[in-house]
Structures are given as structure tokens and as C-alpha cells.
Length: 339
Image (cartoon, rainbow, N blue to C red):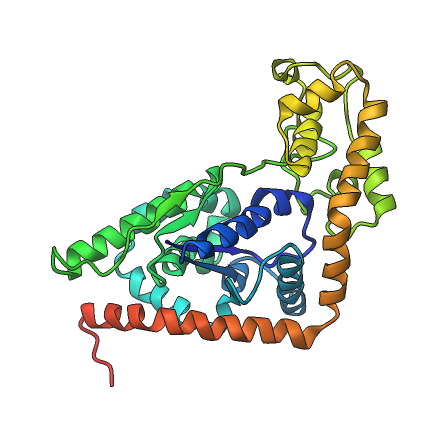
């Protein structure tokens, strides 16, 4: 098994990022490497330039994200951790696959429609071809599995379509070049919602800092945010069904369950009938306890730029070693003459 997954270095990592993706990356690292497989995790800095950005912020955020990932438990000696910009094979593969991808396929991508909005003429070409780079990211390494959430399923389907068409067009039937990656849906992929609106995902783009728990928040800040989180006046139910229609209550209970490593049913068995005046302090204390070691490690690593750059350099070297053979085969399959 070879797993490939990426995350944009947007900075300001929050609880939703940790519980929704990074915690599962660490778990996959432990399980997959124990069975002889490989995990490649990359900082998608090439994807980041598809939207307006500040260069200095992108560089700083890339290093900060490395610090966060390592603080959360990713081990650069067991996983391959790198940024795209140090592996030019990603960009080369994207260009080669642009000949196979079709305009109609890209026009149907929902994230293109969402991000471009009504100003499609003013959107960058990079934003339109973003999914082809995503396909290159995984096909380059012959990934067998790609972790996906609901919002990424369409992108993985496109990668499979591109791989299949390329194999059909340029390869012998019994010798396909690209592996068709399968979706890997983590069993505990938590969808963490805003503390101010239980119907919206926790996001760094929310103008209110009170809507999220940042991985850099102090213990006092975490407790304050949890205590001021939006709720309703009713006590917690004793059964899971009683959370339906109560988005904020459902979100807080789910966060507690995931952080405690238990089930929603178990949380409600303990707190059912209690008001939020008792539940919120318990949730805040649990978050402080679990996040404090990560926070301390992150703050330490963030200041060590030399070490962070060394981690990225080492990971990129390993990634290039894996990427080059597939890229060369792609050039050959297309009839491109190389010296």
C-alpha cells in the first residue's frame, strides 16, 4: 500500500484540521508502515499559487505547517514529508497529463465553480487546471490509496479518469503505466463544525476567532472559547437521536467523543440530562489536556527554521527518487525524446 495525501500550507492550523485530517495521517503512518507500506504527505504550495497570495506568507506558512504536522505526530523518518516546489516532477507530470485531461471534465469540477464564482474570466489558469495537478500528485507516485473526504471524491475520480485514458491511449493493454488509486476513507474522519455555527465547518477563513480552536491557543483561550461556544438552552439528551436538529450540541459532543477516544453514545451516557454549564468546562479541560503537548512541541519547532528546512529537503529527496521512474516512463509513452 502506498498512500499519498496533501494539505495546503494556509497557516493557522485549527482543531478541525487536526481531527479531520492530520490525526488520521498519523494513524495511517503507524498502520501502513507497520505493514511495509509507504505514506507520502506533502505541502501543496504549488496549489496555493492558484489563488492570490503573499509570497512571504506562503513561505512562512509552509514551514509552520511542517512544524504542526511533526508536532501532531508525523515522523519524517517513517513518512515522506515534503513540499511540492522541491519536487519539480509534479509540475512536469501535470503538463504531460494536460494532453490527456479534457476541458469538459475540468468544467464540471464543483470546486472550480465554487472558487471562481461569477468571475471565471478573471480566475487564474492554475485554478482551472488545479485538478490535473492533483492527479499528477498521486499518479506520479503510483499511489494505491488516497485519503478523501466528501469534497475530494470528484478530484480522485478525475485522477482515475485521466490515468485510465492515458493507459488506454498510450500503453499496451497488458502493461498500463499508471496505477488507478482507490479512495481511502478513514473510519474516524471527524467533521468539526464552527463553535459559532454548528451548520458550518470550522475554518480559518471565518472572521471570528471565537469560531475555532487554534492549535496555538493557550489553555485560557481554549477554555474561554468553549465556554462561549453557541449552544441551546436544553440539557444534553441521554441518547444519540436526541441530538438531531441540535447542530451546536451535536458538534460539541462529537468533539468530546473524538478527543476522549470514545463514542457519542458513551459521552451522552455520562452527561445526559446535564446542562452545558457542566459539559462545557469538562470539554475545555479535555481539549487543554490533549492539545497542550502538541502546542508545546509546535511552538518549539516553529522557531527552528534550519530543522524545518532540513525535514523538507530530506523528504523531497526521497520523493524525487520515487517520482523520476514514473515520469520517465510517461515521457517515453508519449514519444518525447529525452537525452
